[in-house]
Image 1: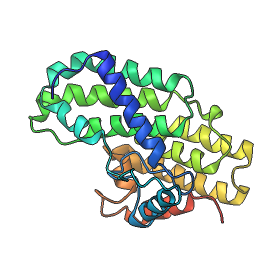
Image 2 (image 1 turned 90 degrees about the vertical axis):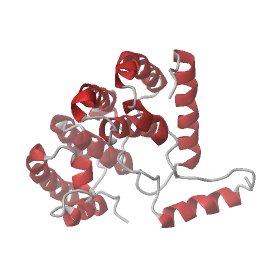
Image 3 (image 1 turned 135 degrees about the vertical axis):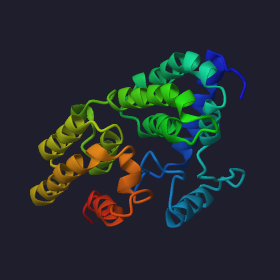
Length: 239
């Protein structure tokens, strides 16, 4: 991967955001930021159908994240990229500053940084650990750009932001999101109390997890798939 200047980075990020905006469905669950694809097969078919209805025949639909290969390359030359990390973060924060709650921009940024902080490296961990830690710090900073109180009244967005808080183990922000959901009446009180109880349990369990999102979605920890899937389902808006 060659060195990119600020303009090239900004243009790349803007193209990713445009891709996300075009491909992200306006209904259903927002993909968790550790996803390697936007949708399960059924939802991807919904996307294709929506595109056909719009008669955008020239548009080749894909839900493969366009920034994944970019993030993969970061660990081939770690010293070069640790020096350019602030510029990368600055470009992302600029894009998020006009509307920190914009889902397409937030998903792109948070997914990129989650990928960058967890992707396997061809180099020894002691050689790239400082870069991985730096990207984790950046992810935490970007998640916190949207205060819990500024989140929308939609449970779809609130529940997604709770998962984002899990990703950086910001239990205080997650708790405030539950408070926000109660204030705006995003769910009935009984359901919200039930989910809050699950959160209290998971916040204790997750202290030992290096990657809580992978644990919740069941890809790493064999003890957690049922809990993760149950939580994912229960966090959906009631029908």
